[in-house]
Length: 473
Image 1 (spheres, one colour):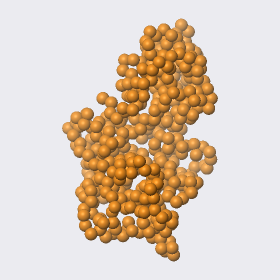
Image 2 (cartoon, rainbow, N blue to C red):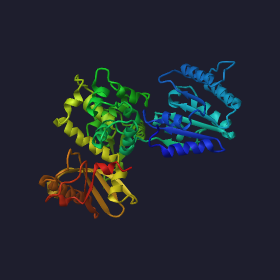
Image 3 (cartoon, one colour):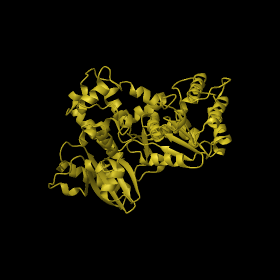
Image 4 (cartoon, rainbow, N blue to C red):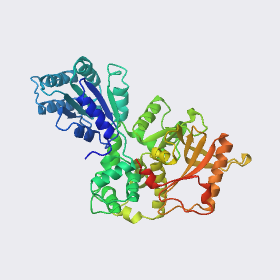
């Protein structure tokens, strides 16, 4: 049962049915469905498949590779001592194969790249000196270490430079795709419940596989995260360790960012995380961004050098809020519903989901084809200039000279704009104009769950986007 991967399946089928060799890189975070995608697309057609060993040394990795070749039907007369010799065995397996298309699937390639192993050199030799010269090889390499895949394979400056024929960056599911998955599994969850689970785990398919029939959503969450034998009790530890070989510095960065909702500059990260300002920090920020844990954006009206970094991974944020100092109550989530802490979390988590569904918001606003930039923005209070001090979590700045100032409000019922809300919106508009000098028209836009109560203050809102709109595609 493959949900929401139609374009990726089409690309893989094109490669499989072609008359040339293909080198395909598939990357995305742990649990995003890379392995499942390949196995579904290539059912019973894999000539060879192998998965790297987590935390295995070079000798362990080569031993496992030899074992995979044996399972595929090739046995070495002399056991290889290095990767060049190991890939010679793969070449021979391909030569012996009678299949018209030889599909080679190597999963978690980054785990095989141990220090001084020369794995990439051997892979270069295999592709450049053998597979690319044939017409029948489809080499598919996957890795959860997105940053590694990008630097070592996709942007390789050596023998693999410009050798990839296709690359697939596997993205999380949207709310709509998660709904499709829920229905396909026969689970009974409404859209509000799907949203709540999404606010915890995002659209990572792996996390959705743990939902059980016959349990309420709260019971499911308690069992998955808070019970004594919770299946994802140690997930945070494995998540970052599976992607980064030395995760400690990355964790310092995301923990620092988790304490400031709107984001931090590079200098603020250095101070808060107590790390050294160097080129290594730039690389680590780029790696966290490429893996989807953080986003980098330029606040509207600010110079690019003052870019902000914001933690946007749903599960990581939930971990620091509730799991880092895990409560002893096995029914913690069921007992937390409608508490002040829960309601505050819902508001913040809903804002992140909205940031992940800008395409759907633009569709509802009728601006899908308009070039836009999506920013957050803030300014400090300055009474002398008539600035109140504002924080805006989403600005959609449009090429047609309109700015949608988005107010994202989680609510169990239709949202009521109060006198205070109207004043806050007008202050934000005032600050934005005063601080940036923009001449664009500013449209206050409400993104909420149930819709808007029509009252005397509702007129300040130009457009309304509801939860159902976020489920459109």
